[in-house]
Length: 249
Image 1 (cartoon, rainbow, N blue to C red):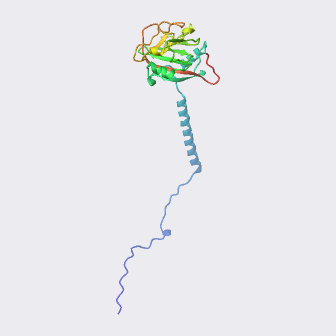
Image 2 (image 1 turned 90 degrees about the vertical axis):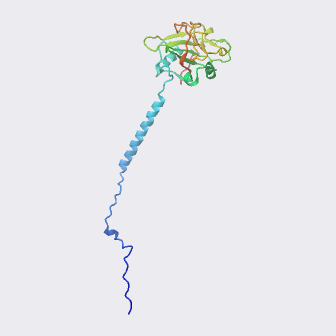
Image 3 (image 1 turned 45 degrees about the vertical axis):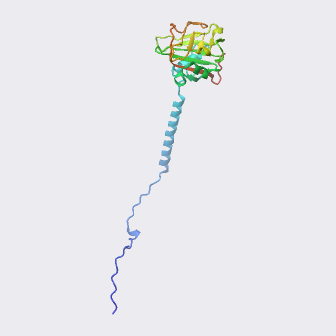
């Protein structure tokens, strides 16, 4: 007699339920071409506004850290011998910074290193403590090699700029062209107008060696006191023609 067959063991892999008998929930995202295009356009417009804004910020600048652009335009009008000042929108010149004391240093050697052979330059300085703002314009090239020598010009001038209602602006044009600019690197002079009408010397910030002594070579003095002074900032700019303009001299 044959032995009985053993019972079948339960299957480890039960037969899967047919797909058709199970509920399947699948969410398929709906593509809206109009909405997608709108979002892209909005992002593009926003980026464009940011770029334009950054360009406006980068192009909006002041020439000087000492005086506003309105006074830069006024100096430009003096160069052109105008009776009325330019405004910032019709200033025909660019003022290109050559030197700034706080950036480049205040030693007279620094002035000559950076300004030698540069023409059509404006020097602007602020006196330490009093905050008076003085300066001068030299249409000629500064000459480091000239030893205690005069440079002749009819177009230079020195000035004091008013900084509030209590101080007046003074413009003093050259009166004796033969004594317009005095150059003597070897005496530790920096820019020197009229020998002493406006003279910067030694270390302009640390040494009280800058002076305005009278008005030799110029129409009138730009400072009432002859006391030596130091400066807390000064700048030298090269005046450059914009298209269609021409600097006199």
